[in-house]
Image 1 (cartoon, rainbow, N blue to C red):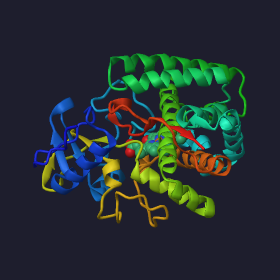
Image 2 (image 1 turned 90 degrees about the vertical axis):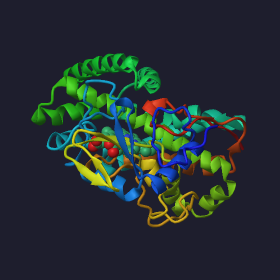
Image 3 (image 1 turned 180 degrees about the vertical axis):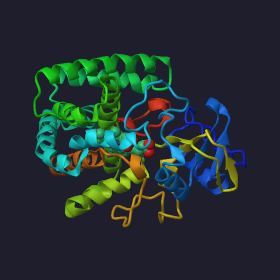
Length: 392
Ligand code: HEM
């Protein structure tokens, strides 16, 4: 394997095949210490911020660091996906539209349904004494939960998974555009059906709230695309990272069994340590200067959240999992107006899975080959696990 460049000419290439987790975190450390604001000419040119304070400050300053340039480097589509590709004032209206799904109250209300889903999935494999956890739990839990909130059935859940897998592979090439067009047409047909027969599901509620806002169906469909994709695949990645750590650390499982109050802290800490979505981009609305580098208006900036989460100036022993780390101001869910609205739901899902596994298959451990995400997956943003065989 190549080693990260040890010279001053360092830069981060999200589409590098070298980006295994070990390589990525070594590179981030080099960037933070030697070249915290680095530049690369590829993909039309972009800067990468790698230190915690710079990444957080940029995420908080949406006036200078705009989100209107799309979430991929280079951009894949002319479609703009609300709320992630919008600045104020439009951004706020889109966050209102998704609030019935993403509020802390909604996540709390979903807990019994999440528990029922997890129990049903665990029932299906518990007698076998072994299972591959990504396909058995990490993928279906968030997918079942979000499709229940939409009042869509198992067949439609399967279709959503299939298009997400296709998009994961092609997020930054031409085929990605075709997937987006097809899926957005699907959501428009769902809107038509729900207008004709409204229910008490999230989509019917969204259409009701939108009567005041007047967003057109094409834009709403783009929003459903990103909400659904983010709403299940990001959680699947995060959940798998948490389960991998626990499967490799029986002593951590025991500590959580002895003191279950630590479970939410442990989840935050593992998401800091193994950040599922490594970066998000911004566009500079005006010239800015950071760490002695002059960045011009209109240039693209990558906010390297995963690097910020290993910054020793903020996190003592950043390369270790400290289960009860406090405070833990990690950026796995971003910061500022675009910080992840799905965090309460994602954390509730991960917590319920962890509690259930510690209760029903304590001591589960890795039993077979772990498959990591492909470095190019998700436009080069994802770092996680795609196969996690365990036994107990
Ligand atoms: C462990 C799971 C998850 C992780 C690690 C995660 C991470 C993130 C991050 C880092 C951002 C910030 C993007 C930026 O800075 O531009 C974000 C935004 C977003 N996430 Fe999540 N997410 C997760 C789960 C979810 C879920 C469950 C949903 C939906 C139910 C969701 C929906 C969104 C949306 C819609 C945005 C855009 C927000 C905006 O632009 O205002 N995410 N997520």
